[in-house]
Image (tube, rainbow, N blue to C red):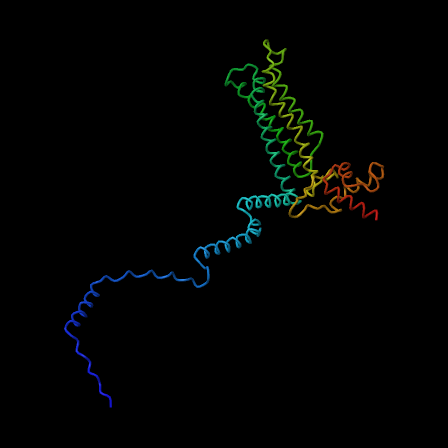
Amino acid sequence: MSTATPTPEPSPEDISRALAEIERHLLEPAPPALPSPPAEPDDAGETRRVRQLRAEVAEARQLAALQTDDTPLLLDTPRLRKRRKKAHEAARLHRLGQDPAMRAWQAARMRRLLVAAAMVALTLALAWSTAGVQHFAAEGALAWSPGWIFAWLVEPFMSIALLVVVGARAYLGTQGQPLNDRKLIRIEWLFLGLTLGMNAWPYLPWSTEEFSLSRLVLHVLGPIVAVAIVTALPIILAAFARLDPTGGTADGGLTSLTYSANTGDRVRRTAAEVAPLIERAQILIAAGTLPANPSAYKLQRALRCGMDDARAVRDALAEEAA
């Protein structure tokens, strides 16, 4: 049986040394902490710079793909849209101008305007000559005397009678019924001759001591204008009466030029619309002026028409020959 060895009691010196060691350890400063190593990224090499560069490459690839798409270039800009709208409106106005009803309305409006302007000019011309006729009719009468006053009435009653004849001829001309009676024409020339003679007589070389050409021209200007209007107005109205709203003239004259637009609907002429041109082309072919199968260019030169009309005539002749 073994016997436990008793633990010796620490001596007071051992206790003092232990306390001194503990106190020294408490008074010493703590050693500096070592820096912790940086945290490694989730993936090998995936740094912020790498992520930024990867984003730039992805953006560049998307931009390169979008830049090859021409869809934005096909869109109309505001300026192009405005210009396209004006061109479309002009094409529609042109097509409307080729409509027979529109052509008839335009001709009627222009005819009324010309007749009104001619009548106003004729009235002013006769009013201009009134002073010259009064000077001739007064024969030196005192101002405001009966002879001087009645002299002012000579030109008005002749002018009114002349305007009645001219107005009747003008109105009937606008209705397509020109009035070319010789008696009426002689009446017109009689009134105009009297007006011209009375205006010019006091200023002719044998009627005045001091002849002045400028005074003579000035006083005969009104009657000359009246003569010109009376002569030209029936001719103009007769030309309007011969107009054909379909594009030609009532007597089978030349047709108007046609227009073919590059975009939109083209103005096409059928064989029925160019029948007068076809007849004229057949006459020229029979006379030997045109070949048996003329081209559109030769037809255009010979018939003096538009290229579309020439093509329509060429096609019609080719169909008849076949």
